[in-house]
Amino acid sequence: GGGPAAAVEELISGVRRATDFAEQFRSYSESEKQWKARMDQLLSLSMVWANHLFLGCSYNKDLLDKVMEMADGIEVEDLPQFTTRGEFMKK
Image (cartoon, rainbow, N blue to C red; front, side, top):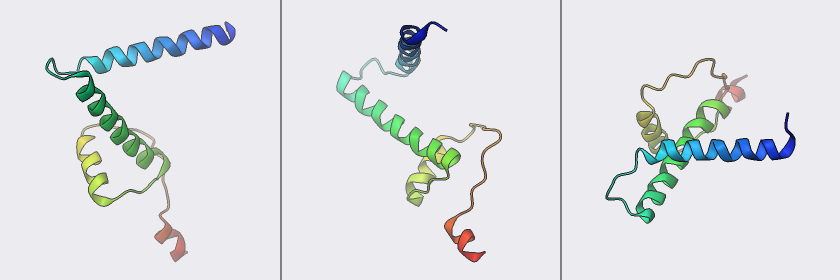
């Protein structure tokens, strides 16, 4: 409960926790500009990973290889199963 104000407060709290978590990976010598660029790249790569695993999106092989290498060791249970266009066309 609590309505819209509580929902906004919960959202803000979640953003603060995520920001605090990410800050621990910031190098002491990184400028704000460098940090923002690195965070933007990491967030983009994480979206590629999530879109590929959970939505079945396909990407350039080199990009996907890099993302999957970075995600090595991350275990996700109960992933959806997707049929590729090639598999679908064979039917």
